Structure formats: C-alpha cells, structure tokens
Image 1: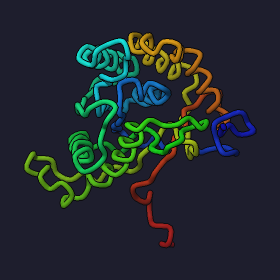
Image 2 (image 1 turned 120 degrees about the vertical axis):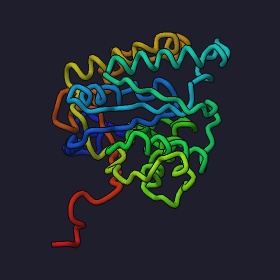
Image 3 (image 1 turned 90 degrees about the vertical axis):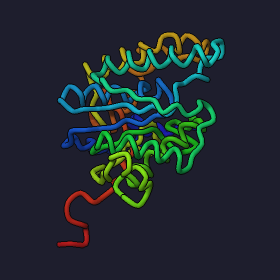
Length: 263
C-alpha cells in the first residue's frame, strides 16, 4: 500500500521535470490551517525567497481539529498558528473563508468564494491539495481536502469566465483568466517537483513547528515536524534528482505557447 518507486522516492519512476518558476504571483488554497505546512510550505519558502508573492486562502479555521478544545477556542488559536507559520516562509497575506470545519460542502457557493479570491489576488499559479480518495503512499484523504482541492481546480478556470458568478462584477471583480496551472500537492501521481534542499526545507519545518498547540492536540497521532518533513522531502528528492523535493501534480489551465497542432 505505497507509491514509493524503486528509487526510494514518491514518484512513478524516472526523473520529473522541475515545476516552472517563471511567474510572480501564487495563491495557495487549503481546507485547514496546517494543510499547507505539511510539505508545500517548503516550496513556498523557495518561491518567496525568489521575490514571488504567495498568499494563503484557508477555507475553514480548523476549529474541529483539536479533540480536547472546543471549536470556539480552537478557531482563533489555529488562525494565530497559521499566520505565524506563514510568516516563517515569507507569506504576509492569510485569509479565511469561515466554512465549517469537517463538513465543507462542495458546490457553487464554495467555488464562488475561491473565485472571488482569485480575482482579487490575480495569481498566475494556484496551489492546492489532492482531491483524490487516496493520497501519496495510499493514505486515505479527508473529505474537506477532497472537496476543497477540486473546488480550487475548478475555480481557477471559473475565475476567467465573466458569465460564471457574474455577480462578482458588481463587487468590482473583473474576470481573471491569468491562472496558468494548478499545482496539486500530496498526489499519488506527481508530474513535477520543487527542489527544497537546504534553507527552504528548514523554513518549511519552522512553519509546521508554529502549529505547536494543534500538533500537541493530536496526541499519539502527531508527526514531529523535523523528522517527518525531512523524511518526506528526501523521499521526493530522487524523483527530481536532488536531495530534497516537494512534488506536485500539475494541471494546465491553458496551453503554454502555441497549441501542439500548430507548427
């Protein structure tokens, strides 16, 4: 029950290409505080160090994530930890949509909320989490993750269509068709990778470490940030031919350059 390949890494075999980095703005969309920190934050650290702007959009405040803490107390705590973790990797903008943790509903309302954020931030790249039932290494994915990941993928295209959610124009939000691709983290079948060897990984570890109260609340099921993220990045590294990498399944929203049938 694993997708580890014969190189020891999380890939289908062979070497993956690096994820394109010829862009300036990215929006990372996740269901819960800490979702981005389980790997993606290391890639975010690399990108912000390059001068790129990365913003976070959290669909919930993670209020159902700590068994021993009432949601009314958990929500502001987890929001504060998410903001602290984001600062560790150079992210200043962290927004929350306030959908209900654990019971996020897919459909037009969620897509509209994400489209609204895409039109405001005008990213060239959207990063989100896997929307499959199984994630990397065969781990069963959470319901909120599946719903949010697919909604983010659909919203990346919807954002450019003025006749989908036309009411957003009344808010002064014109269509944004500039999303080039959606990079999905945690996929069992990655297509690209980001080299996070060294400082990006270290800052990613610091980002997850900022979620100390949440991690403590997981009890025996918690992952210690340093050993877990180091292990995961080193599993991804061989697929890119580097020491440590974060892998993504890239979904193209539009052709890069001329269509393949044009000579």
